[in-house]
Image (cartoon, rainbow over all chains, first blue to last red; front, side):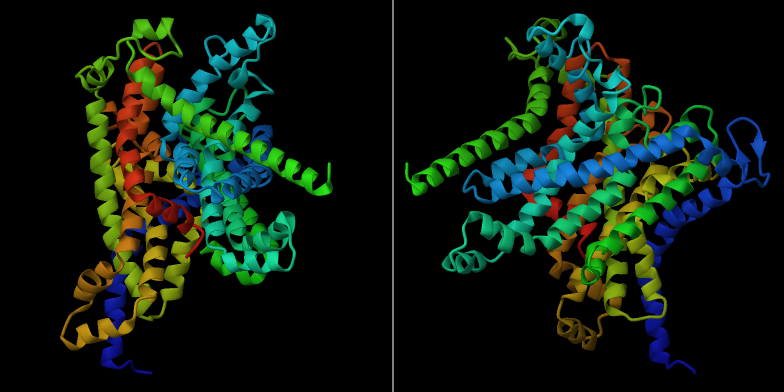
Length: 301
Length: 282
């Protein structure tokens, strides 16, 4: 069917307008992702290697205990965001919503960590948790903890991960709080008045008015937590580089360390990048299935 | 005590507990920054003797040192400024044009284009780091500010496109139709009608993208090599470990990097929070 000249012009105009964005986005996001897939089947490295076709990188990754450990840490991070950060953020949002003049002060204070670059945050918290000169251990020491039993925090095999998760939560609770607070503030007051006329107490108001009205902001928060915990990188890399001995390794830090920093095993790193994408899409897809259908389009957009 | 009395006592106890927890968390979130600001005004000698107190005689020495020629924090600020401003300008214009096209002009493939941008909201963006590093090195873009600004634009575009598309779609078509009858072309309609009417969306994209990129660390770490090209987060990271002994100096550098961000936050808080949620909301 021949297109009318007007329609053809419209088509050209539409593509011309969308063109610059599509071009940059394709060149610097889509092409690199395709590049990761292609590279992952070769054996490119800083020294030697080449374009030989192999499944070896995937075999190696899936057989590496560190890969599975890192994956487990990503899921732990996800659990911490869903079970600790979001509930804590909801509690703080409920508190802040009832404040009068102090509301912006509290909101700004809670949100502050989101405005600071992770390079600075990681540095400050590493100082605070420094085993020798940090205030946390000085406090413990003045409480009578012996010098030999003072924890090493970020340097300890079993405490490093909880410490890192604490710092990440410290940063992101304010982020979820702001999203949930916006949701709380948009609940019509009449709903509460009507509930009170019907004899509802504070708990009933929360259970039967607030929570149902908050389902959308809560799902948005949960979705951002799911996406965020699979791609997490910054603070962990800055504070521990995934160490000590893999105790805080995440998929992204593992990929970065082996692929670019030590040894420069580009192809192995690319295979890890592809696996990172696969895991992310699987988890995001799973989360979308768990959310009620009518909401899904809204949440992911 | 009556049941009524017990209930008010319980409620009062709950209120006290809520205030205590909320205040404790506020102290915990704000204190590290306050400590950094206070420490930035101490000399090294005073810092080692007086870790937690106020400085006895505040000094600006750390700020001037950080900007001095041995430590090129001036350079890091300028690099960050150049990269951030370039990327924000390109993201805003390219995002607005694409958002307009997707909102107003139905064309074959528009669903696919929108889908590709929505995919960008969930893709783990760090997966692009290794191939980007190889591609940019091969193309001569490696370790350049342009080579950093390009991926910055690319991964900022999904939020910008989705936001602009949503905003433009909500504008009444009649104004544009009137302009078209007057002979205005598409570009004029976007720049002189749609964008001025969408000032909140423009502000959100500019401010949110600006703050995100000014603070961005991972791409700078992967793509930049020479210290002359560092942006602030990378410079902070590298110099805080190289100058681990000089804590007050690092604090001063952090304060100077944070000052513009805090100013932007105080002036335009709602735009930042809206931008954050735009990753999830239309």
